Image (cartoon, rainbow, N blue to C red; front, side):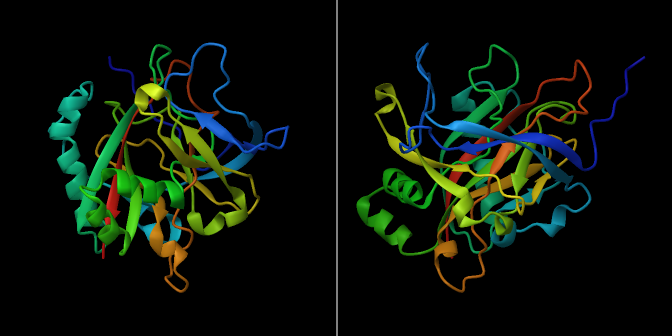
Length: 288
């Protein structure tokens, strides 16, 4: 007889790992890619806090990119990509689906440039594990660098930067069953103060061209409002808006335009639960 189970549901109090500044007062940085043994991947510390994380299940339509910098998408059709194990196959089969989703979902979007993806698996031998540290993937300056890096020409980059530009990650689980372990938590952008957001230099190795980007770490603040979507399935997506240029324009109505997020360990997860597997596709989105 098949064993039935129900993933954890409802609001939960769980530990989230926030930013603590470097003890020597230096500027914070991360080392990206494969970090050599014995090298510390970051120079800043961790402030672990017990946080109320609310369940968005049943309230999916309440959240918008302009207010929360995240959006929940339900009932997506099966992907043409089946295994999610080969990068070339993912780019051929899954990228067009992500592009279509963004063009259909983000109001006014008229151009999408997908620039990379990451697959995360909880298994010990996986190169990319779920990130259990509160962060934002991009900042204003790193977004501009991305536009200039991935546009077809300097002239196109100038034209794109003259309008509205964003970075949006499309996140989905790859598990065959609803997610039980290490779900993703995300904070409503409207509740995250600018003072909570700490730019962090993101240094790639020479093998990756020595590119230096910028991410953001997050200070804990009691006013932050945290959410997750319980028991996520493979036909659901979360749009995670890392940056929106409209947030810089006074009176635009965009409340922050950047979503802090983190994997977290749900204390209700049953022993032996299947490890979470997921893919996030990162895209530049332009318009109107």
